[in-house]
Image (tube, rainbow, N blue to C red; front, side):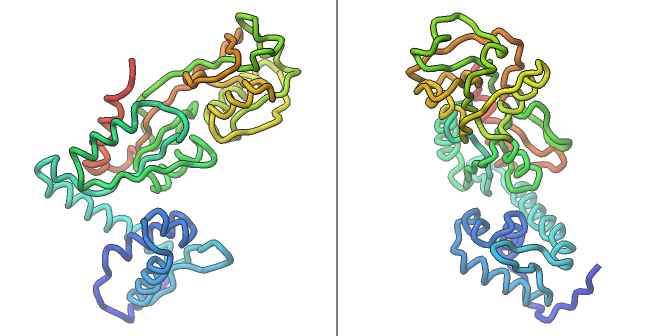
Length: 303
């Protein structure tokens, strides 16, 4: 372990620890500043101030990424412990839910309604105006959201993974069956159902790797020994349906009820439905604001 000799004994402010933890999590001062709703120069100055206070360099700066030094790696868990303890103290000091305060980082899908999230957030804000809810997405879909949750960059996240890592618990929200989407004039459009084997020669539109639905369908195709050609990968399922409806390929994705101009056909093969849930870390007790928002989201599920 690196020897740390503080050369500045001034009190370390909580905001500096928050900036340190954010930069470590994001690997970037720019992304950390966006996450903290702060100017990049403010975060850079905060890290420099913390380094002067502790008498060590916390990050190596190489190109666009910043990487923890040995001292930074040693200090990071202690910084998180301090921030968690402060959150816990605020929780214990809050008697009335109207005084609930803090921050909840929620990972969501931007183009697919799982619950009436806007309604949930509107009511939550009215009841708990002192709580800041930050909504985040991931370009790698549900895999990225769960990774961010495990890494501590999120407090809650939607997930559609067939299985989740240890230390994550999931509350079910919605289940969606796979269906086939084509253009209205596609040769299969008039049929009631179609098999994956019949679709094997078609160009496919699908979501990118890392999305839960892609993982489920790829596993089903592997079991059946079917290879396909994916001609376009989208970052959301409604886009798959739009492109398939336009005749650019076929889409085999969960039916989320999104409106489209093409045809929808039942899938003859048995494919596990996409099960969307709300994920939370199980290792540490979340703050009251996180628990309250999670409860409200689960209560808004349909069926």
